[in-house]
Length: 243
Image (tube, rainbow, N blue to C red; front, side, top):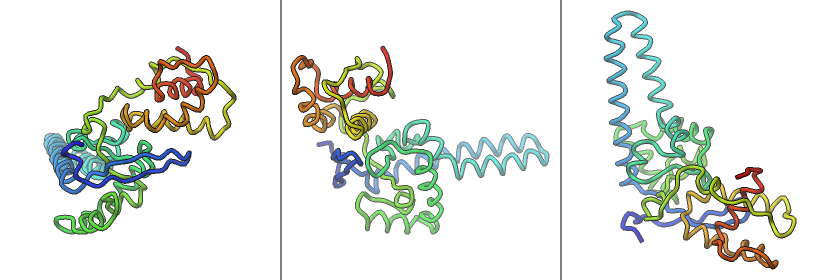
């Protein structure tokens, strides 16, 4: 196991009953990521100040105030949406924000967790955030509790190869299920495909094995495909995509 995984693991259960393990990032690596992001924010604010100062009029002052507000309150939200839960600091440190069940973070969850950042950092050196992270499973600060999120290590840190967004589904040949699937089964397969890039190949195959073997029970299924690839093929068929 990677030396970076010094924090305890945390089990997660999806609404479809898929169980897997997340590896929450602890205080040291999150502090480094936050410091990088804070430095990036200062650079942006300095550029805004220099630009507004060059205008030398009331418009420049108001523009500086508005952009300063946007940087303070929406910096992390925008990066979470652009890079699927990763600000520049988190991206460099190999961690990302996900929802508590391991699903990619959405705009509402990201906004809530960052709205509470003010409360977490209310006093110098962020004692509220430190106490909350130390006392809670998954090292959650108040913003994580409010938004229902976790900060976890990515597959990159674990040494697992990762593909660009969409690759895991767009490059799978559609597979027709061997028997009609119930609504719950379809949703479970689609949710598995959604979480696939956060799991890594080895863990994805481990999770997919029981369900895939059940679906392969009928004759004529392609045994050359891995269990994860087999479910991804069905997911592509269910999603309505064509090659």
